[in-house]
Image 1 (spheres, helix red, strand yellow):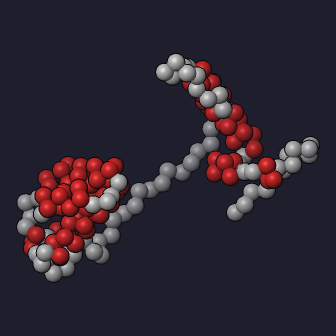
Image 2 (cartoon, rainbow, N blue to C red):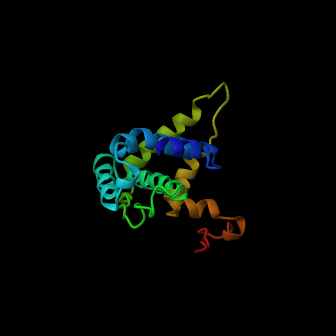
Image 3 (cartoon, rainbow, N blue to C red):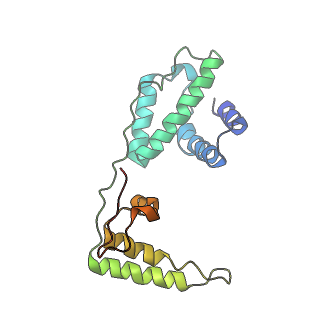
Length: 171
């Protein structure tokens, strides 16, 4: 079934990076993990056990990719009457726990700023880099705005004649 999937994957309109990621998942995780299981023997329990092993060994993100690939594989099997149900449906795959953001202390920020300025001064392919990155970092730190809020600002959102420049941030 993996070979049939890889042929269909290659013919699909998926982005090339997605194709590479899915093909890698088949070769690295799915074929070694459950490649010896016959299509008709692939029950929800077998798939669930495999997914839990991937979560433990490689993390939830990899398990979610494997789940997406397996779901597609079994859709192909359904089309070819090799199975009567998709055993991947109904299996819950945990999400990655997002790391809680931490603010830099003043010393860490000064270190980051120094490194940004040094990076900006290094030529790349004979050209200088943009000199704006450390200024963006300064603006973020001094205003307390988030990156998305800063990049969404327009001139009409600021009053540059005021003593303190007020910002109107759209929610």
